[in-house]
Length: 400
Image (cartoon, rainbow, N blue to C red; front, side, top):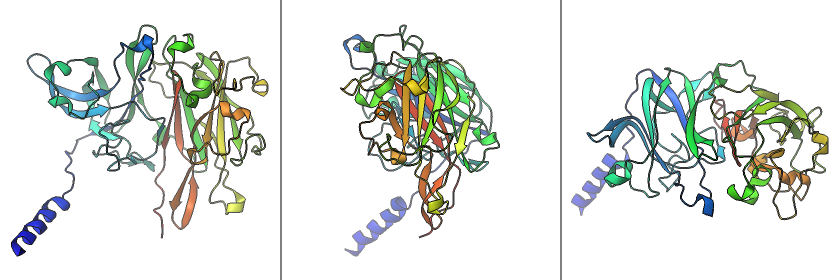
């Protein structure tokens, strides 16, 4: 009995106290990868491949050109989530091998804190000129290199990228042409951590990475679902962006607006799925509530996209009565709600907006629970979908 107990204790010491071993990367770049391809369940799309991918950086190929290894491998790159939080929250908490982004929930050598910004959602990768491959793979849990050989040759993209050491990059796999079904990628070199941004302002920028010809296509060829709301049709190639700030998440028809932030024009948005240029950031104040000692706030944001020439005050796009919206690409809206919840939205016209989490983060920090922090966020429109990515500065740890 004592011998068995000793063996169990020894095994616990060996395995229970083990920790991840990382390969150090000299002069790394910092990379985050999103799979923006979406699978539409329709007769017209039945022959299309499901966009479940394997990503390989600097692949090793055998004599026949088949990949057998690589310097960086993401075996199970799935379609991205609508919200990418400012920290890799799924590490160790998910039972699925499917990964909504890279590094996502993978336990890898992450990016550092740069100029106060937490880059733990970016992975350290080699810098310089890199070969990168994306391959279709079956939707199962078998690692890519253990698949049958005939399943390891279905290449989606095979190209090279150039990454500068200590720079931050976001890579998107997306559809470039809706009718031709052409797929490509965008590699964006971020600059938010280099800008003189204020702690008391919230920053957001926008991209329309929709495919050429998407908004013109018939709705029967597009995704369906009540969650898409006014974005089902997509948006036209040139739109104006307006911002409204609400003081709280009461029924929107009666919720008070913040002064000077009712239908405030921010700027123009142009469709561009081929450019790596970083869009300008727009800002608005944190508006910490005086009643909460300036520690937290419950404001939420609504962004509306209108075709130039349309007046936001005369917005005609309401529900058709069955939860769907026909906007012909002329209008779409986003509600960035407190805690990401659509509760108390009622039946007002604001229900035409797609619901996403707030651009403000409320979290236990120091002795305050919660405390509101400003963020730097990016909103990307890709065909009928909208994605929110939030970056956050490091904040003081909670005190219990």
